Amino acid sequence: MHRISRRSVLRGAGVSLALPFLEALAPGASRLSPAAPPVRLAVLFHPNGVFPAKWNPTGEGRDYQLSEILEPLAAVRDDVSVLSNISTGVRGHVEATSAFLTGTPLHKKAADRINTPKVGVSLDQFVAEKIGGRTRLASIELGTEPPRSGGENGLAIAFANTVSWRSDHTKVDPEISPQAAFDRLFGVNEKTREELLDDRSLLDRVMADAKRLERNASATDKAKLDQYLTSVRDVEKRIQGSLNPQGEKLGWKPLVTPTLERPEDGLPGRDQHVKMMLDLMALALQTDQTRVATFMMAHGFSRQDFSFLEGVKGDHHTMSHHKNQEEWTAPYTKVSRWYVSNLAYLMQKMKAVDEGGSTLLDNTVIVYGSGLKDGNGHVTNDLPLLLAGRAGGRLNPGRRIVFPKDTPVENLHLTLAQTLGVETDRFNAAEHTVADL
Image 1 (cartoon, helix red, strand yellow):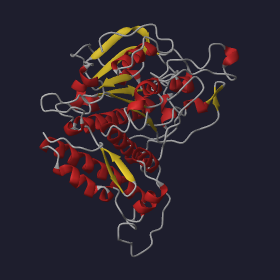
Image 2 (cartoon, rainbow, N blue to C red):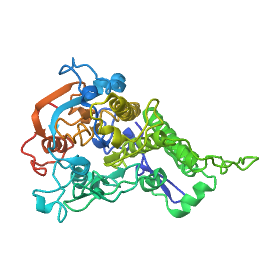
Image 3 (cartoon, one colour):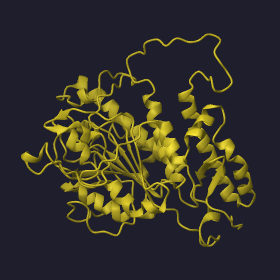
Image 4 (tube, helix red, strand yellow):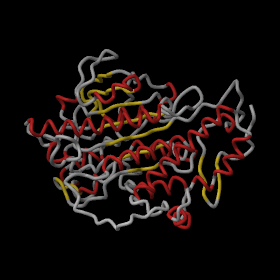
C-alpha cells in the first residue's frame, strides 16, 4: 500500500476540507492492520412527543413488530433499537426539552422555578468535552427554528431553544442556517463566501490538490475520496440552489423578472431544510470535522405548521394536545412518521459510507427521540426513544429493549458516554449504567 505523506486535509485558495477516514492516512497503516475508524455521537431531537397508541410496538427483542409511526424504519430495522421505559419525570415542553440530554429538572423546588434554574451538562457536551480535542470542532449543534422568548408554567421558553448545555447555566444554541453551518464546518471565510456567490465552486479550488493526492492513493482510498468529494459537492449545490433559486449565479437569468406571490399555507422548504442539515451532519461526521453532533429538527416549543404533509392541517404543538380525538391524533401521527422517516434517511445515508469493512453508521451512536412521550398531558414517562448504529461493534441493534419502569434517562446517557470511550462512572444524577444495549 502507498502511504500518503501529507496531512489528512485538502487545501486550496484559503479553504481547507478535512478528508474522510482513509487507509493510507492512518498512523502506521498497513493492509494487515488498518486503524479503526472513530466512534461518533449523533443526536436527533423532535418536539411535542408522539401519540403512544401509534408509537408503542408490540413484542420484545428481535421479534417485535414495528408500529405505525415506526414503519419508515423497515429497511433499516436491523440497525436500530426501540428503547422502552426510559423517563425523565419532568413536566412541560420547556423542561422536557432541557432534560432530554441532561435528565435534570430545571428546578428542585417551587422557589427556584424562575430565579436560578439549574440544567446540568448535556450528554453531547459531556462527551465533546472528553473527546472533542481530537477533532477541529469539539461538537456541532444544528437546528431549523430561531430562538423564542416568553414563558411556560413560570419557566422561560428560552430553555427550550436548545438541548445542548455545557454546564448548569451555559447553553449552546443551534445553528439554523445551512450556509453558516457549512462555513463553520469547512472554515469558509468572508472572502471565500463572496467567491462562492461569484460562481466558483468550493471543490474546484481544491480539486487540483485532490488529484495529486489520488495519484498516491490505493484503489480503496480513491473510491472513498471520490465518494467524499461527490458528497461535498452535492451539499454545496443544494445550498447554492437555495440561495439562488432562479439560477442567477449559474450563468442564466430569467427573461422576465418573477414576482413572488403569497405562499400557500404550509412550510415551503421545511423538508429540504431538514434533509440539508442531515446531509451536513453526516458529512461532518464522515470527514471527522467533529465526532459529536446534535440536530434539533424543531424548537422544543415548536408550533410549526405541517400542512405540507398530505392530510395534515394546523401546527404541531396544537395537535399534540389531542385529547384522544382522531381529528388530532391522525395528523399528529403523520407528523411523527415524517420525523422518523428523516431518521431513516440519515441512517441510509450513513450506511452507504464505507469506512474499510464497516460503515459510518456502524461506527456511530444515533440517539433519536423527544423529551415528551405524549404532548397531551405532557407525559415524560416511557419516552419515545430510538438508538441506532453499532458504535464500532459495542451496540447490538435490531431489537426492542424494555427496561425496568421509569429507568432514569441519565442512566442511559452514562452508559452511552462509556460506550463512546469516556472513562467515567458519573453523569449528572445517574445511579448506574443500563444493561443490554
